[in-house]
Image (cartoon, rainbow, N blue to C red; front, side, top):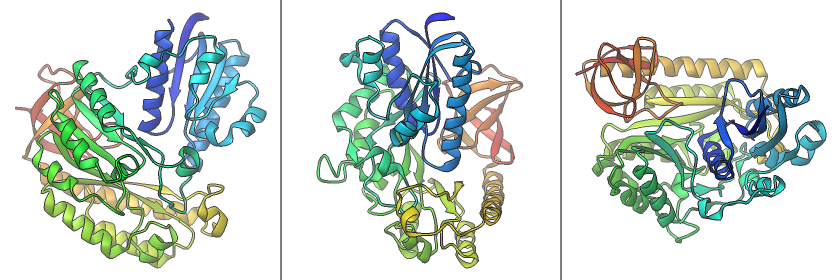
Amino acid sequence: MRKNKVVFVTLGCSKNLIDSELVMRQFVANGYSVVHNPKRADGCDIAVINTCGFIQSAKEESIETILAFGKSKQRGQIRQLFVMGCLSERYRNELQNLIPEVDKFYGKFNYRQLFADLGKPFHAELAQERLLSTPAHYAYVKIAEGCNRTCSYCSIPLITGKYRSRPLEETVNEVRSLTARGVKEFQLVAQDLTWYGRDLYRKATLAELLARLSDINGVEWLRLHYAYPGQFPMDILPVIRERENICKYLDIALQHSSDKMLKKMRRGITKEETLDLLGEIRTSVPGIHLRTTMLVGHPGETEEDFADLMRFVREMRFERLGAFIYSVEEKTYSAIHYRDEIEAETKNHRMDALMSLQESIAMEINEDKIGQTLKVIIDRKEQDFYIGRTEYDSPEVDPEVLVGGNVKLRAGQFYNVKITGYRSFDLTGDVL
C-alpha cells in the first residue's frame, strides 16, 4: 500500500467535478499524491468517492461504486474510504448504517471537515484553487450553487439549497488565473446559469459576466451550460453574437413541449412562450447550436403528450439533445402529489423513440456540414485519428470530430478542418 496516495472518483455532472478538483488541490497541498478516476484503486492510502444523487440511475451507480470500494477496503487494498457529494448530502445517515466500510460520509459542502478528521490543515489561501482533472487546455467554471426553481421532478434544490451566485470578480479572477496556466476553453456551469446575479446584485448579471470573461486575454472559447427557459435574460444574446470567443452554443433544458406536461412539471413556461424564445435565440444569434434535455415518462404523460413532444423535436431540429426517464425522487413535488403510473416498458419505448428521432436529425445536420471548414480544438489521439471538437461541441456530452492522423497535430491546439463525412453523431475531416 502506497502511503499518502489518494484515489478520487467523481460521479455525476461537471459541477461535481469542480468540487473534486477543489478537494484534490487541498490533498496535494498536504503532501499527498492524487489520482483521479483510475481504472484500478488498489494500494492507495485513501479513496474518496464524490457521488451523484440526481436520478435513480445515478444513485444506483453511486451506491455500486461505494460498495465496490468497500470490498477493496475489506481486502486491505484501501486503508481509508470517504464519501462526499450529492448522494451523501441527502442520505448520509442511511448510508452510514448500510455501508459501515466507509470511514465517514460528508455532504456536498462540508468537505473541509475531511481534512480536520485526517488531522491535516485546510489551506484557506488555496480555497479557490483546483487540481484540474481535465486536459490542460479546457476547464469547467462554476458560477453559482443551488437552484430557486421548483420543478416537480427535481431533487437538486433539496440537496443544494437556494440559489447562490458566485461574486463576479471572483469568477473573473479564477478564469484569469486559469488562462495563465494555459487553459483556453471554458465551460460555464451552474444548475441555472440564467438566474445568475439576481440574488447577489438584484438583477440578471450573466451578460455582464460574459463580457468581462470574454475580455480576458487568452480566453479562446466560452461555452454556456444549463440555462433555464423561464425568465431568460435576453441581453446575453447580443453578447454571444458579437463576441468571437463566445461559442455559438447554448445548453437550455426544456424537458417537454406539451402545455399540460409543462404545467404538471411546474416549469413556469408555456409551449408558445418556448417557441417564441427559441425563435428569438436563433434570430439573434445566427448559426447557434442548441443543446437541450427532455424528460419522458413523467406522471400524467399520455401518448398524445408524447406525440406532441416528438413533433416539437422534429420541427425544432435541435443540434444536440439528451433525454432521461422519470424516476420518483422522494420529497419532490411529483413524489408527494403524483402517482408514478406509467409502466417502465412504456417509458423505455418512449426514450428509444425520441433518441432514434434525434439521431436521424443529427445525421441530417451533419450531412449539411460536409464541405464546410470548421475551427477544431484537438483533445487527444486514438488509434489512427485525432479527436477534436468544434465550438458547437462541449467535452464529454457532445459529438466529436475525427481528424485524419496523416499529419502531426498537438492536443490543445486549434486547426482548420474541412469536414468530409460523418459517423452517426460524429464528424470526420482533414486538416487544411
